[in-house]
Image (cartoon, rainbow, N blue to C red; front, side):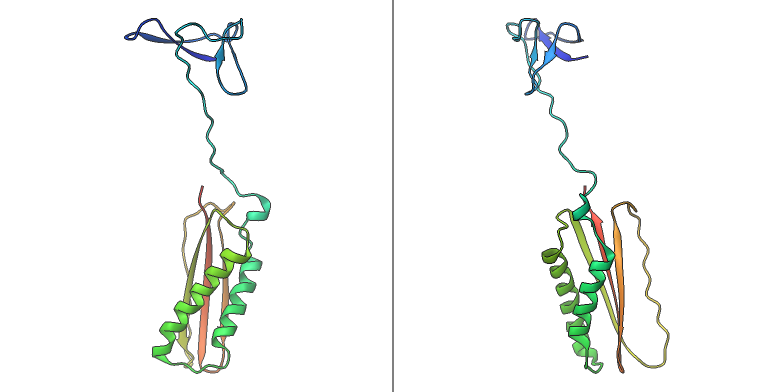
Length: 165
């Protein structure tokens, strides 16, 4: 049924549902059988929510495309370089910023929050495991992970795409 607010006085207002007596126009105004509101009738427009719960197919976070970008940026910044503890701090920020900016510019993901984590270390016969744990909606949120290694540097990048509803 339709919801109508009929005010008989300024102090008393009551709500009634009468589907057989009322109709709703395409702009949300409640009408009587004669196609007009009652005299002194208080009209309440019903507006449906406009939020989007899921991205369109072309706006999804696709790990394969993000991996390509991450791999290109990492190789561009680190190929042929030797490990330097002081310079590494700048490299990490530059790599993370460029990955994030390229994902935003090249991919059509307007409602995604992009989070980039870059870890760089020196190769010295050690084992390293970089991992992450997240709580998210598996139908729309995702991640991409890449690794880079040369004679003296290893790098792990993780890019997370979180859909904001």
